[in-house]
Amino acid sequence: MRSLPRLQQWLQRVYEIEVEYDVMDFLITDRKLVMALQGEDIRPDCPEKLLLRESPEEMAMSLYLAPEVLQALGGWDTAGGSQRTEAFCQAVEGVSHFLYLAWRAGFERELTQFELELQAEIDKFIGLVAINQDADRSSGAELCSWLFDRVSFESGLDNEDRERYEVANFYAGHYCRQLNRRYLTAQDGVGLTRELRRFYRQGQHGKLGMIQHEMN
Image (cartoon, rainbow, N blue to C red; front, side, top):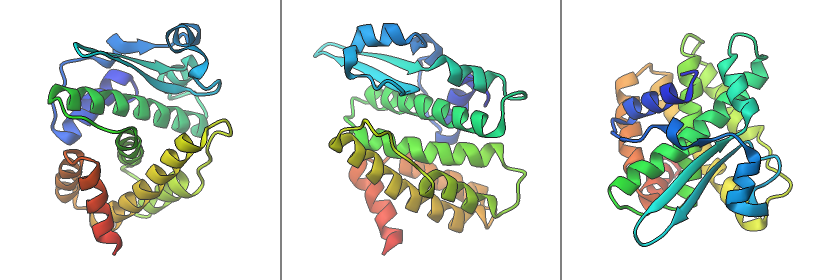
C-alpha cells in the first residue's frame, strides 16, 4: 500500500467495489497548476485536495497531492516514522476522496462533502490498522487516540469548513472505536469486512444512523 495505485486497489478490495479509473491519471502535483485551476481558494499549506468541476453533461476531477507527500510515501524505508505516517494518511485521504466520488458517480448518486470527509477519516484508520497488523491488540485504541484525539485543524479554515471537519472527526472517532471494540480486539476480520462494506454503501443519513445506534 505504499503507492497510490496500490492504495486504490487495496481500498477497492476492502469495499468490494469496481472503479474503472486509475487515480494516477487524475493526479496533479504542481501547486501552480492547482491555483490556475481553482484560484486563491486553495489553502496555502493544504497537501491534499480534490478538485471538481461539474456541468449538466459531465464531471471533471483532479486530485492534488503535494510532492513531499509522494516523496515520503515512496521513501518508506528512509523517511522518519511521523513523516511517513502523516504522508500515508494524506495519500489515503486523497485516494479515498477520489475513489468514493468516482464510485458514487458511477451510480449517479449524490453525496456531500461531509460524507467524503467522514469516509476518508475511517479509511485512514483502517489503512493504519492494515500496515500495523502485526502490532498488539492495543494498537487500535492507540491509533484512535492519535487520529481523533490529538488532531489539529488548519487555522485558516472558515467556520463552515472547520465545523465539517470537526463533526466528521467526531463521528469517525466514535465509529472507529466501535470497530476496534467489536472486531479488532476479537480478531474478527470477516465481521469487520462485512461491517465496512455495509457502511460504505450507506448515504449520509445511513452512516450517521449506524454510528449513533451504537452510541446510544
